[in-house]
Length: 260
Length: 279
Image 1 (cartoon, one colour):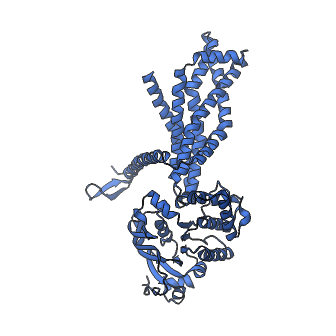
Image 2 (tube, one colour):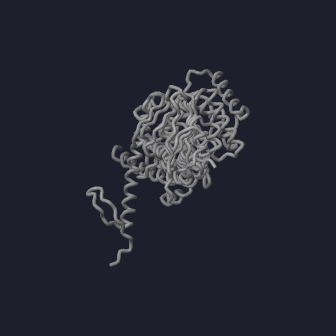
Image 3 (spheres, rainbow over the protein chains, first blue to last red):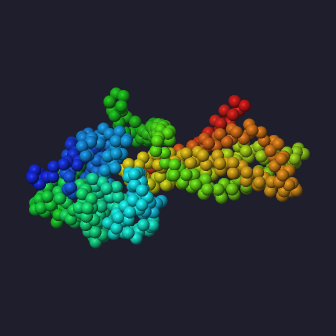
């Protein structure tokens, strides 16, 4: 087997980093049935940036963001989100933190038994309890217009195409005005045109809602379109971290296989 | 003698040493472990349900929606089954009573049978099939398609929103449906009596209720609540703990029906024993 020479991990200069750390992960480990999926992962997400976590299937990308929002409990390591240690929070504290985080699922995860309108109202009614009916209606219409699907209000999820489901799912996550967005494979299963539209939407969400995002993907075009910074995972470890240029100019065969 | 089952080496938890064990024995041990861990997990699940039932943010609107889903949508099935149950029971019982010249006792006998035992048990078994499988499949499907996770990250407790509402709705709706089935069963019985006779509904009901006492009615109603709880808990448990693949949905629905039907019979056995001891 060919011995691959790993390049030194380029880092962003302190000047380029906005000050506030939104997420800080140190020494994260997670395994399933004696198989280590994440081996000592450390990362930081700064205010207002889009961090793309790149890697082939099975490299532990989705496990990483599921640990961030505590859908999975890590075996070791610390995860701080907005200055709070995720693993030491009780249920109420965790719910309070989750109200500030939007999570776009790979499958969209729209509630099948609800219309698009009810899907969007669901988190809004629970998280923004002070809103009046009129304000809820306005907010729902606003996010639907932002994702370009204002006419889908009364449709059921089963009546939507894959791209529309992703857009509605994105609308459902931004309806609560999150500070942090976690995207799990946002363009998987979509055609190139729709993928580009979703990538453009991710950038729009970043600008309009001032979000800081982690985007999990293996889609290079999506990574190029959305990344302020890229981190590549390989076999559960950080393989390379840097700007898009660092990856495009790399001579490392593994990285080249992604960026060819 | 040659060992028919392949032998493998595993590490003993007790001594840390390698021990030889046949694959068959290992398989049985794993099945037993799964069985007991399933019981333990269900106990934890029930504890969570009890805890969330008394939480401040009870999902009353969803509870009412589930009552409608379980109650109203089961009415036609329960009505048809209840009426047929009454007709069949009457037609089958008539020859035996005729042999003893006790046909006049037919309404009373059928009423006691339906109210005490057949109404609650048959209704619960039908509902185990209808709502138990529905809950298993719906929650299983929600698990597979990450909808439960989506609820979790929306700061909504899925246990409170999905499970508690369904379990309570089943607990309250099953006794109501049992009463409905009892009523339709008696109506069916009146139809059955009139196939070979001419008895007015007033006379039929007065004969039927002259044999029924509070002691026949009350334990049956109480055990119906337990039937409802069992159906709700098992359906939700199987769906909520479904695996990640699509086949898990079918497995969850199927095992929900099998286990809840079995537990309805077990609860009935226990209820009969307790009633017998007390009364």
